[in-house]
Length: 452
Image (cartoon, rainbow, N blue to C red; front, side, top):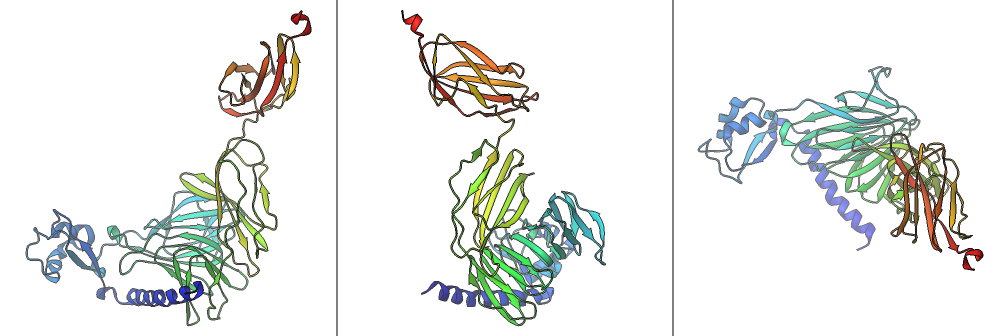
């Protein structure tokens, strides 16, 4: 069976499944039940207190489930509780990470206040991100949505059913782009849906991106993992991982198309100690450009700090602070759909920058019993750390001087003839030690006079 036929056949099964799911979700809550698996030691009244709106309804729960003894429940058996009777938690989400300027809008679309990391988001809130600004939202089931720059979204539904783990999350994306990582949706009313002017999307746990054109309302959907059910103008499509679709407002959906594969990033170490950090990748067939995203790790979350499209196959950042980062690169095809991510996690520790070494010159030859070591000034350094070894791995250390005043910038040492390697690192007044300089090698031989 071809890959396309497999995707099409799988799509038929999953479309039927999602159609059933949506039908159940639209049924009256009184017709739906949530199943609780009984654990050893459970009592009916405790279950009612934990999950039901009215704990006193435990007698009806006993009657509906034919439980002979409310204090002696059979472990492993299932207790069905009407969804309409389930206790609900507060309908809110959290802005776990705000980068730049993000505004909360009123019903007329006017800003009413800036968001900060940790702020609570309520059902019905409309949020707008400014240029070079992003927002990460965490929902009650721990699903997360990254809202990129120049985007506008409304949190249409934030219903959660307490400790059942079920949530009913609906987000309307008016413009811009989002990247969702959805937790598995379990239960009869568990939903995660995104709607735009052009398409409605429903998932049961997956990772996918959408981008809405503000002028036309056209929506690009790209699925990174799992399956996404799309519906538009009476038509439906199942979008599998590695596929995408473009939805035009008022038009039925076309067939999902295969996305570009991830480009191959060139080899680079996980720890970068020189500025600027540089990256390269292969020229991807079919790519007219590349989406470059740089994410920084903050408060255990990744915040998007740079997002651009480039025609080049290399990138560098000249003013990047030290820290932990993730680089994502993906190809953009002729329709604007973006493919799989090439991902590189790296740590930048380039500061305080090391000094440039001057004497003795690299691979030089010295004569005599004493050698003068000298380096240029590093503006960030208040002290220097000097190391001299007999091997390039610095396992056989000959001299180690940890705290040399920044005013000195030189060391005079008496040495025996041989091959040597040396390097210098900068220290700040707070004790921060930067990376070592490039390693200089030299050989030392006895002077002619001393040989006689």
